[in-house]
Amino acid sequence: MKIRQNLRHWAAKKALTTPVVGEFATEKLVDMHTDIFLGKAHEARREERRAHLDDFFDATMDTYVAALEAGMPEAEAREITHVQANFDFFNHGWTEMMEIPADEFEAHFRRYESFFKRHGITVDDPLGAFRPPGGIAEAPATPEKLDDPEYENAIAGFADDVYVDTPEGQFVGRGTDEPADVDVSQAPGMGDADETNAD
Image 1 (cartoon, rainbow, N blue to C red):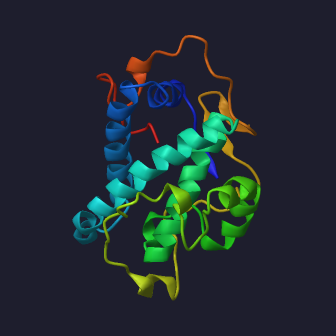
Image 2: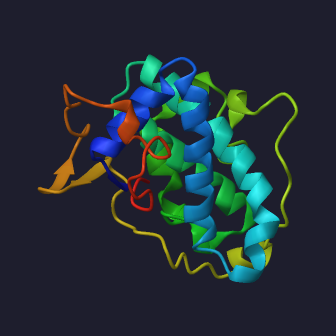
């Protein structure tokens, strides 16, 4: 899967793994991700999906931290949460919000199979052990979109690795090295910088 990785991602990692600050950063990152993906949905469908996405992305922040604690690089930990989201979008028939086509699910799953199995994550249960005890908000599905899916926002052909786009060009592999001078104030929601490209 193609993802970005820049200073703001490293700042977000630091924020999410810092006590007290982590709770605030989670709230801001959840809001940001919900808005980004709702922007890919038809306007008439956006608000009915908001609560579900808020709950879902909140849970994936725990996945992200768990992946980091398991020793995964930042890029892979973040890609795992995107794979979870794509499983969920597919289950709801929200194909227009998907970043990868469903025929690449198996390849993505296999790359993180040990982590997914350890935490009970599957295509049918994208959150696995990270599902909150009280569950998450429901949202209407659009299963008819699965009959002839278009995946209009998906980028195919990058299932074999996490492909990181940097200002210097495309980097393939485990991601860039973490800068030594990461400032938590540069994380989304922690300062005044633009947040639209922080995904």
